[in-house]
Length: 285
Image (cartoon, rainbow, N blue to C red):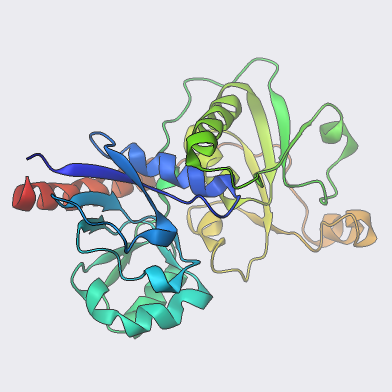
């Protein structure tokens, strides 16, 4: 019986960023036989083990860890939240079996390293979406969860306002929506201004100019800076803080940034998945 391939989904959160990460993982598998919900990852019992890329953040359900023995995990772009750290500590042996753990960010690598678990920073699989062939003529500016940011009037005029917060209606609806959203950015965006990590990273991957607002102290979003991007301080540029005057004075924004060059990152991510997948297929295929 052939090895099975599963796609990690998250039906309970209402954040299209989870679906975007799911789509990114699917790029690297030969096919998708079924989906597995992240928050019930311990429940699966299968005739044959299933390959599952364990990317994204873990997790909202500590009781669902460790994953079912039926799952053959590929740890790339793995992120551990602060609330999930005690769960990881209780189950050190599980991750030790799959070293080195490919993690999304330096903070997760440091945490696992402090527990004696070997880790390597692979960054996020959403950086592997294909680059678009060319920018659109008469492209649009997108404000993605950025309505609180003091954006110049010249850019706000005619901009498309979007949010990545959605109703948790299930992946059968949200995965196709996420795909259409990415296609829309790819085909029509001349600039994306966002506070959302998983709007920023796919746009960087696709070669779309992007302006990101966050906190330089946030280890979750430090990946933007680590791959050569700029993080502008959300607080300084908030409309509620002197209408962004302070931000413009001490943290001036480049509103016409060039696309970031991330081909080496893409290559490293693809190789990280391919190497782990080949090892599994050699053993179980």
